[in-house]
Picture 1 (cartoon, rainbow, N blue to C red):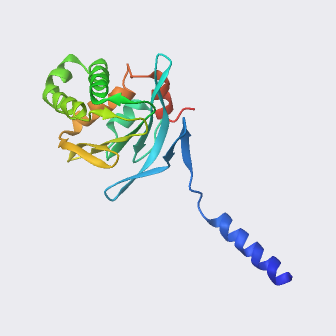
Picture 2: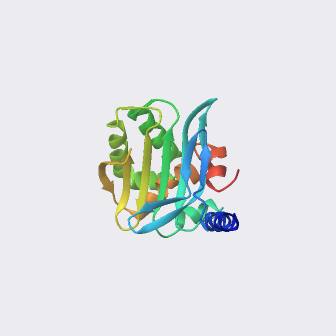
Length: 193
């Protein structure tokens, strides 16, 4: 009986020593604490929900090299970043593209809009080509310095990468700029509850 008790205590101690596989849950969507881009492990900075009027549109999580609560610091932070978006309702690629363009224009100067117009047209065309996007679809917008912006839908790369680190920052302002698509979502992405 003593051997059984000792074995049980050792097993319990070993279990407590294992790191917890935690995840942040938003509207039933689980965002893991880390996300991998190439050989770089990113940390979940925060996660929340995009609400339009009273409808939950998507849950989103922001992954960065070094978590921070300051939007400007995060946008300018060196290294890769990723926005994970999980749809909470059916959308069309056109809906997604229009919202992206609207958020981009609201958070970037007229000069930046003119500078990035060709790239914005490219990302808009890619999103329109998504067609019908069903509830539960996972979209990753990965920002890879020196390579560009990669868009993946359910793990499959869509379109070519769109080059330019400054363009990546302009896109990230859709969620973290002065006029974000959703203030509560911005707060959540910055690590707020």
